[in-house]
Length: 209
Image (cartoon, rainbow, N blue to C red):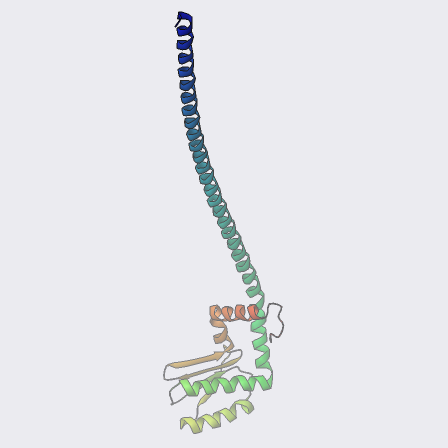
């Protein structure tokens, strides 16, 4: 074989080897690039997911904070509104109870209820019934006769200028205060009941005074 043919053969082998090496290197580089790209995508997706989760958590936190602030403002506004309502309702309640005592029919109901409560709660013995000075004997004498039979002795009915409406019944250190002053004394309980009534009848429909 001539020298030129051997040289061409060697050049061909070198070219084929070079081409094979280039293909191998190129395929390896492509595989590495694909792996690196996939890893980059995974890291990017993980970072994006983490940011999304963080933003959602921040959004929920802001939403909860906004709701809590709103609820606090509503409660504060409701408390202020209730205070204003009670400030308006309290003198009206006092006036309404005074009017009930001023009317003979409702005065009799009030007195009857007080005496029946006293019979259930107070011990027998000498009773003193304190009442407003303008409550006439014609109205309280029937109660005196009734209690005399129940108690075995006549109770003492005494006019008391400190009682503007209702009755205060006392015996042996025990007291049943069914006077207007006594009823109005427990303001916290009455205000709670007033708020309950207002909650049931927000527009005042059906609420009697």
